[in-house]
Length: 351
Ligand SMILES: Nc1nc2c(ncn2[C@@H]2O[C@H](COP(=O)(O)OP(=O)(O)OP(=O)(O)O)[C@@H](O)[C@H]2O)c(=O)[nH]1
Ligand SMILES: [Mg+2]
Image 1: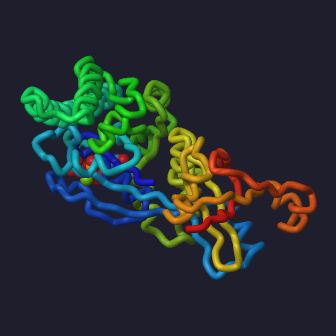
Image 2: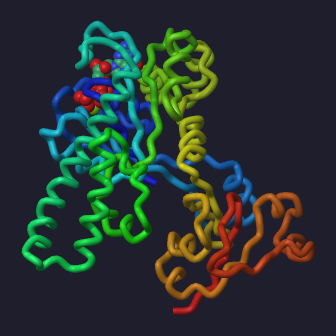
C-alpha cells in the first residue's frame, strides 16, 4: 500500500512525512521539487503472537509506503507533482491549521474547508488535462475511420469521465462498466483514488473547538500536531515517553492514522505462517482467495488449486494448529472464497 501525501504549498507535508515515518527530510524547503519515500511497518499484535507460536526464521509485518509529494497539487505547471500522485493507491490531504507567522499561507490565511476544496479542484483539473489530451487523439483516429473497437470503448468511457469532471465531480462517480473501467485504468485518475485528511494543527489547538469543528466537517479526517511529533520521533525511545507524558499526548499519530487508513480504505490483513516465515499481507476487503494468493506470488494465482484456511482467533483460542483441526475449524476453500481479516492461509498450487 502506497500513500501519497499531498496538499497546498507549505501546509506541512514534509513535516507530516517526517512525523509519521521518522525520516528527517528538510522542512521549509520551499520550491524544491523532490519527492521522498519511506516505508513504515504496520504494528499488529497478532503477528507478535504468531511469532511466539511458530518461532520462525523471519517475521514480516505488513508495511505502508508514504510518498511526500512536494509543492502544491494545484500547481499544474509541474508535471512531476501530478505524476508522483498518480502512482499511489490513496491520497492523504495535509491541511494547514497551525499558526506560524513565519510561514505564509498561499491563500492568505487558515481555512481548512476552503483548502480542502482547493485540493479537490487541483485533482479535478489534473484529471481533466489527462482525459482531454487522450480524447483529442482518439477522436482524430476514430474520425479518420481508423479507430478499433477498444478505442471507441475508451473514448466512450472518457466521455463519461469528462462529464463528471466538468461538473466538478470525481471520476469515482462516473459509474463506468467493468470494461470501461479497465479501458481507462492506466490513466490512474487522481479523483478515483480514496483519500484521508490530516489536519496539521498547532500543539495548543489539538483540543480546540475550531479544530474539532474542522475535523467533523472534513471526510475521514484526524488532527495531528506534525512539528511536535516530528521532534518527538527524532528522540531516543526512552526520552520519547517522558516527552509525550509532559505534553499530554497519549501516543504518536502513526498508529491511529494506520487504523484510520485501514478502516477508510477497506483494508484487511491475512497471514501466512510456518517455521520459515510468519507474515502479514494487506489486501482490500472483498478480495477472492485466488487474487489474494497472487499478492504472495503470481505463480500461486496462476496455478491456484485451493486455499487451506483457519482463523487467527481460532488458533489463539485453541493454542495450536492440531487443536484447530480437531475442532473442525480447518477449512478447504476454492478460488472464489472471500478472504477475511485474520485468516491464516496456505495456498496449494501447481504450475
Ligand atoms: N508552527 C508550526 N509550523 C509548522 C508546522 N508544520 C510545518 N510547519 C512549518 O511550515 C513550514 C513548511 O513546512 P513543510 O513541512 O516543509 O511544508 P510542505 O508542505 O512540505 O512544503 P512544500 O513541500 O514546500 O510545499 C516549515 O517552516 C515548517 O517548520 C506545525 O505544525 N506548526
Ligand atoms: Mg515539502
